[in-house]
Length: 158
Image (cartoon, rainbow, N blue to C red; front, side, top):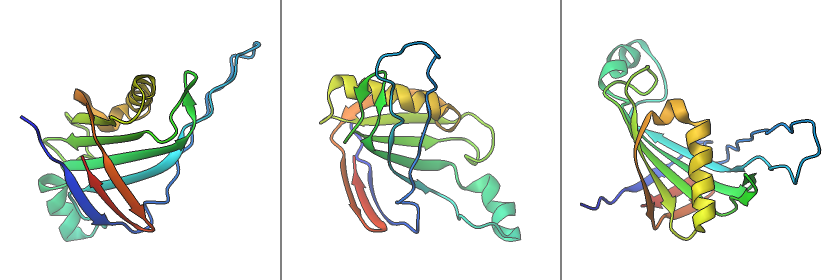
């Protein structure tokens, strides 16, 4: 069974977020060191992003159980493999609000236009850096990803 994931959301300041990671050298003579992956990150969750007495008390247990996370790498390498122009999407779900500890499960979608080495490196990076958010990864699928970024707006089709 194939599923179509289509998201069209207006974001407020999230789109320009950059992430950085530092991979320390062992102190010995090393080959070309990896450059920390960087790019754009978008997150859409199924709960309000503000907390008031009503929202916190009710939505904490009834909403916020699903999220779509998107990474568009602009540069960086993992184990010597460039991640430039690779796109990753994670669909995450849980039986509890994602901010709470629980049994999170996810499916990772990786861009079919990327090379096999780049896809593997990107998924390895995602599993290593987002383990707590992803929880149990039940599948990794190579698919066509259509991501359009326009200022603070984005559309995503997986």
